[in-house]
Length: 530
Image (cartoon, rainbow, N blue to C red; front, side):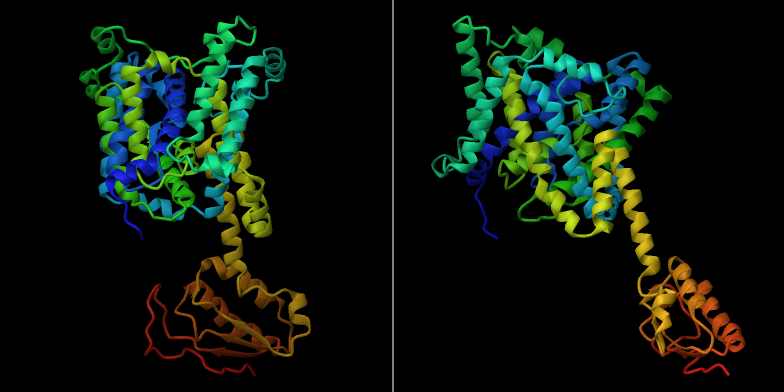
């Protein structure tokens, strides 16, 4: 693999870091709003997620920050505890628990997420991004940035009439111009060579310039403040100090704080592991992240973020997807995004407050399309129903509920198909399969567990009198006791009664799970029922 110098790495990853910064900025603010927390708390989490977690983690694509999946937990906890300062203690506790989870190697849980579920989650996030950004693209910003739930209170048909009644022509123009620039930057060879000038930055600048022209000319197309990024603007050091909230350490004596911290740790860790699996699949070089190190990095990040007034964080799919799509090659991209958040919030919040939500919506809509492109659905359709159904179930469930519930439903359906396939594989023969067979051969797999009992039982039940059956266990290292007894009963009792000729080949005197004794004796070899 080609090695890149640190300076070269910065040059290579600056464009993607800038894109993630532009995506993360309104999301951090929106999640703060959704959580009932101070506006700057989401930005602090984004800065720590980029600089601290980005530095410690060995994920090359994943980007950490405040997560929409935690907003309900955070909002409820702040309300119950009565003060954000007390809630920050829960964030510190969550960080400590995540550190412990990393040291006890709990990150291996991620190895049990099937690819069809992970891909379904990514496609669902893409669908959600598009659905949630269309209103912003049309100039309707009633729904805050960073909100990732579609059906909070059922389907609200009044929402659509409100949406079409509030369409802003200026926002539509900015959106269309921004999308055109982004598409041209990818498709026009002369533009795509300008790697240090990301299309997203050009689109954002074009959006600002267009709106400033609208305002300068007194046009009705001018986009108002309610449709622009809104960062707090400190006018003095004292103002900035007031934006930062520190923990009230008396919260450590409150059992509710500990329960909240444990809840955040579990939910944040699961979301992080899911995102890491997804990020590794988005990585063009298919590098594998150390998930235990990731949990430690998240723990340290949450400790620091909560200690200085930030929201709890996770690895986040939306930012990670934008990072991958923008061409990130290393974790420097995540760190650059954190650095840009820090510098810009401290130095140029007034300039950032000129950015229309419409131009950011254009960036995110294209990110969403790349995640949920039709080719992905077609790919899983061609893989067959055992792959397609869990994939589609995950997509629908994540869109209809939330990330964790949706992935849980997808996992349950995927596991059902895995168990069903495991039960039938190499064992189940229907009556139709057996009707024309002169000799029935049943070759057992390397491991025969209780999951295979039902299929073997059905096969043996379908065998007709006067048949010849060979059950071959020469390649089998383990057979569950109840399955072994069932085969013995068939050979010693039913076969005699129905004049079935049975050959049991390669069976041992005993079986121990995951052990194979090459010197063990054969239980019954070439036994023929009389």
